[in-house]
Image 1 (cartoon, rainbow, N blue to C red):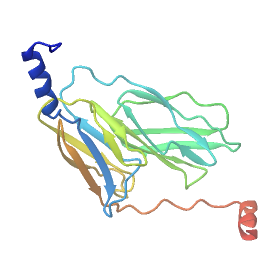
Image 2 (spheres, helix red, strand yellow; image 1 turned 30 degrees about the horizontal axis):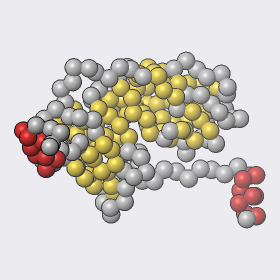
Image 3 (cartoon, helix red, strand yellow; image 1 turned 30 degrees about the vertical axis):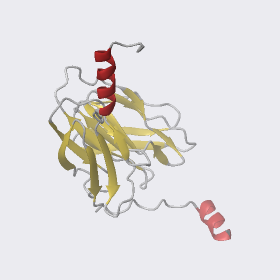
Length: 215
């Protein structure tokens, strides 16, 4: 004798046979098909709950910014701790946020508020090769791809939604976005043609140059 009434058993079998809807997913790659890390993906849709501001850090170590790309909701604060033994002078001239943190070592300046959406390019007045990016976003969803170039999106409302993808190497201006449409169950593949020039090569100190020549 069945443990379940026949109608319930039939419904259980039918539910197993009907495929469940897949969550939307985005894969970002280069034009030659290589997974693309550090791509920022924004998805715009109606959301009752906006993204609250965050408090984040971009620290300096080995004369480099970490992380190289950061995405934060509009209104967030970012601090810039110096973990090097040399001073840094962090600044940005970007329209979305202009600021200047004069030479400092371990005395981390107060966090900077990023209250306007856009791409903020960071530099160091002492080390020209140092560069990082803060993408300030007012989209309900914004995230950064890892080494696999893939993002699984949260549950989206039914229908089509605007999607934007940005990468530092898309264009020399660092302000160009790829734009398209995604639905609530799309497996979207985005191929980006990287046109920006490579970042400058770090200048070696005399001691570092001697070590390099010796090896």
